[in-house]
Amino acid sequence: METALIGCFGGICLITIQEIETKERSLLAMKRAKELGRPILMSEVEKMNHIDPLLFFSSGNEHYSGERFFWKDPKDEFILAGLGISKQFQIDQSDDRFGLIEREWKEFLKDSLISNPFSQIGIGPLIFGGFSFDPYKEKTVLWSKFDDSLFYLPKYLLSVIKGQVYFTTNFIFTPNDDELLYKHIIDERNKLFQSLQKHHHTALPALLETKEISPEKWKNTVDAMVKELIRGPLKKVVLARELRLNFNDLVASEAVMQHLNEQQHESFIFALESSGDCFLGASPERLVKKNGTELFSTCLAGSISRGHTPEEDRILGEKLLSDQKNLLEHQYVVEMIKEALEESCEEIILPDKPQLMKIRDIQHLYTPVIGKCSGDSSLLHLVERLHPTPALGGLPKKEAVEKIRQVEELDRGFYAAPVGWLDYEGNGEFAVAIRSGLLQGKEASLFAGCGVVADSDSESEYLETSLKFRPMLRALGGK
Ligand SMILES: C=C(O[C@@H]1C=C(C(=O)O)C=C[C@H]1O)C(=O)O
Ligand SMILES: [Mg+2]
Image (tube, rainbow, N blue to C red; front, side, top):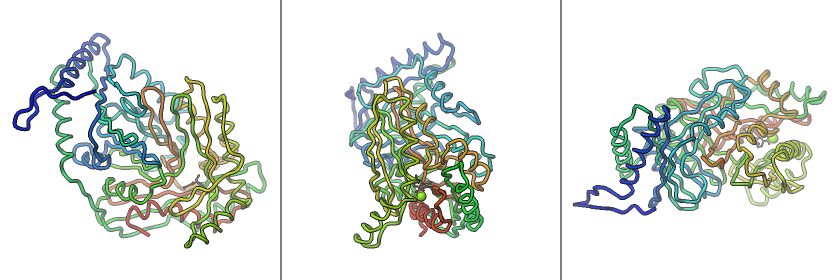
């Protein structure tokens, strides 16, 4: 769509054809809201010149602080940055939280006016958010700003897809709104564009203290778990722990995002703000992506450190590829993901042996999965079937989650759970929120876990979790 200028005088552009269309559409949306007696969404997509998505995210620090999200895929081909909350979707403890989010989103989209002339997924109205790992785990104050399921439709969405920039504005008209709302939104949007001209650079405060939460107790829990796994019937349980960090000033999410973006090229980079806190991370693990009838998932489990030299690194990789304990840890994940996807897929492509995924601080066993599903398969239903895979929960799934609920000291919140987006056409992508942390003012919590099997040794599992803290720790100025 062209943004044709009708009149520009002395650098001030008065009105565009696009604005006239927007105004007409907004009058229609207001009329519809009054007739139907409920809120109506009007969403518009425009093509833009290049805007740095992190700059866009940062530019929201004044007016949209606490209402921002960010998402980038490992290939840098798909980036989303959202500012402001047009509509929030949240659900507390429920057995049907995935289905409820999906139904509420579909219901909300009914009768909406969407102007999107581009055939591209990830533009136009979409919700971004995540789920807690286990809604039945006793809540602590740590995650008080996040509900068990929390998504929002942003007011403004920047999508950078294979270098092309799209800008979506989402307006909601209620039966009581009049033209003033339209004017207000246009003013607000103009202010947002003006703020993009400014340079936003936020430095990180100094890290004063890094505290491991009960490491000895954690190792004892792993030892006890190993004994239980030897007895059966549980085969694998993932146990996680926490680091708590203190800084001399407030930690701005954009400063951490900047570092993650520079330091973690091979990962999904995500951030979700909620009421002043921010959950963010750099995860190498895709849970599921849906693009039309194509599905993509990842089996990722089994880990070893990187070498100091290329030769040492190669030897470590070879060792991982033939290590029975790690291969078993991985195989459990492959079997479960295959079974979960088979229900919705006509065809699944899955290599019979894992390969290596090498990322900055660690290498993993990795099996990519591709599936072909029927067109009406729902992404959130797939997320529900998959979460948690034995890479984050264990095997059997239900018993492992119950065991974690019972023995793990940590309140996982959104850690190790699905985080991602769902658009108005049912396409989207979810990553597993690992290598992540929660920013809370002058403090932060980091999370890391590992797959415990009958063959596990608590000291090496402890060291494995230490490697997994590194990406977030480095991004926060620690070692
Ligand atoms: C649980 C985490 O990572 C998961 C556990 C792995 C393992 O135990 O080998 C490997 C990759 C992830 O699926 C984490 O990073 O916190
Ligand atoms: Mg492991």
